[in-house]
Length: 213
Image (cartoon, rainbow, N blue to C red; front, top):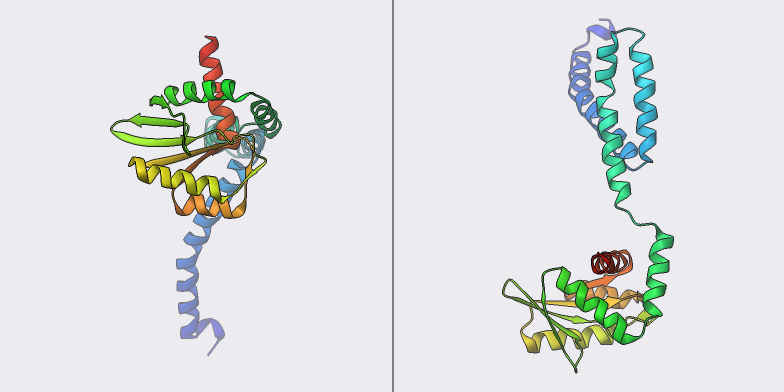
């Protein structure tokens, strides 16, 4: 009996038939992942190359239609990349925040929380600086240690205790500096919102932009 007449050959062909569509789908997903995380103009170059290739064998309309997936990826990648702040601008913004006196920074944060829809009450003592209320929920925000180069666990522990005493559903810690690994782990375990880095810089920028209008 020849090899291609053996029963095992039909099993092999059936297996390949089942695997092939999955491999094709995986390849499409990988291509989308690669292009969507690459510069948006790369997808435009791919679209142009596909158009030039397909038009050698098919009408221009069909060639143009074949580029639509890549044009869509280019639009999606461009939208995603436009929302990512420039690291240098973020660093400059955080440095400017650390250079502010407390009164100025507190005023900006109060306005920023109001822009997020909170009713804000200033607290004069304790671990929190602001009592925030929205839709029946209470949050406490700690901002006074925003200049610290690296925050440890203790301020976060004090904030959690203050939140429990006040019956708050959320605790927010604002920092223009870094947090230690232990502090970040503690925040994650206790569901503390860490308002820092790019998120803090963007919130302050939006707040200042709203004031200037």
